[in-house]
Length: 56
Image 1: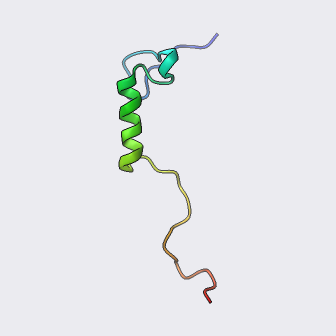
Image 2: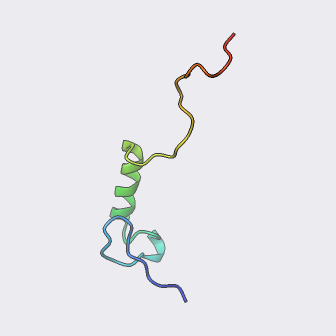
């Protein structure tokens, strides 16, 4: 059986099935805003050339 986990944003309430893994629409929106603001980032290659690639 799965244990109820707290909301990853507010840590106060268990996840609501409709907004999982968040407890509410507000917490889901807060998380989305953090992505848009750049507070979260997925690691990747730099967009700026670092000189290691061959350029024509």
